[in-house]
Image 1 (cartoon, rainbow, N blue to C red):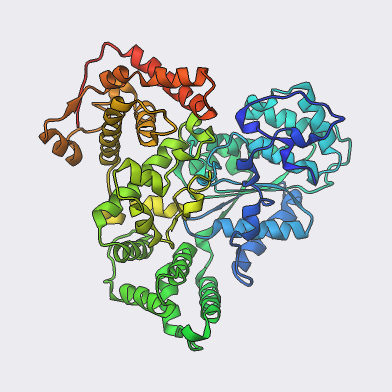
Image 2: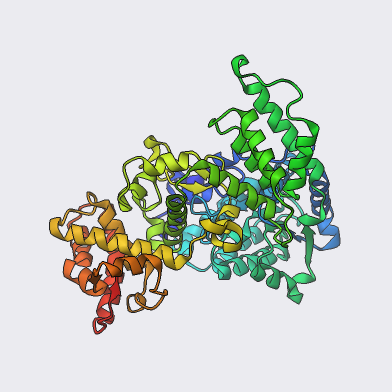
Length: 572
């Protein structure tokens, strides 16, 4: 099998000389894209369908694959709501295809681990083809040698040079070799234009005359994806599979039965749980409340085995809460999942205002990091939401954030203290449905917070840290709170829109304004000479951290200069 380092640093758009006679181990490969495939370390222990579950949909998908060439319909779309189990189905499908030697490659989009964009999509697919298709690797390396900058070019050109041309030069009969490509979580690619572009690339792969691939893509039915697949050119060649059309109740029952029995038998004798736990009616209530959503069942299991209490007591707590709820008259398909989230969040911490603040702070930081290419590509781990970072930035007692989030293990990944400075040592939600819940006021109720209020909170904290920093002028590597504050203001806002982009009449700003504290943000940043500081630090070769910060600050400083005529102020 070809080494993943074949494409090392492709996501950085860097180039190196190639010597075909040398080992390919020093060429393009991205850790982020390794995790996107069925061969990743994460995949090896990621959840798949419980044996004996989702059999009907898996059989239908395998039948589609077997008949694709004869039907000349080689593109399928598996759609379903968040938490329906699409990713588990595609992981299990990958295992099935591997067993039949039909899997050519895969790509699992995710909002975690920088897999939320399509930049490395074609490079990752072509790399997998090196080990899947005989003779492909040698021809691919020649293409790269002839055009070392290929990874900086458009995905369409990459598709032609890194996939189609090596296939055309194989001079083998059509129909030989693995042909199945699996793409999961397309909706988790954050850029709508990229999502549509990926669908067009998949269409081209399925219609390639030399080596037509059979493609199954899974996603939530987001409006842009639905509209693209409904276009005549795609609708005529695409086979839809709608997950809500498959009855999942028996599968969820089997999953809950298996997992709760596993929890029961795993307990030591001193904490033993009797056989027959839980009772059949309890399982049936959970299945009814799940409403076909596997994420509901999975969250119940995580909560029951989180180690914060006895499993019997924790499950009884869930059952009591759900059974006491009045039937909802709303049409929210996630009503029961929302109720479960609300219960876990309400019993985990009595300080609900702080919980709300920190939950939305995590959303805001990921929104900042994941939508800004310079920050996203930085190797410095301090930019993501760690417990230490949140404590420092919001002036909380050390350990406050860790204590609060450690009670939410069923909903949130909380890094250990040893992981704090590891690039993966960030606070993350286990499932995207949690983000959707927090962003929708009708779903999260008192835990909802508008993006405007959260942004105001960050602006206030940023200015406070910068004001303090101006008296001591510590290097960014030491004063991380001020550093993040500067970057937040530089990256989050277009400077001439700071006072107007959001409604300034938010509660936080009104309180601060009542204390008669006001700053000219543009004037303050300029007076602190913050952008020049980072640029000078980078020029002196202080660290790669300063280099990446300098790029962000330099761009922000250009914006500052462009709107230097502005005298707008913001009350804080």
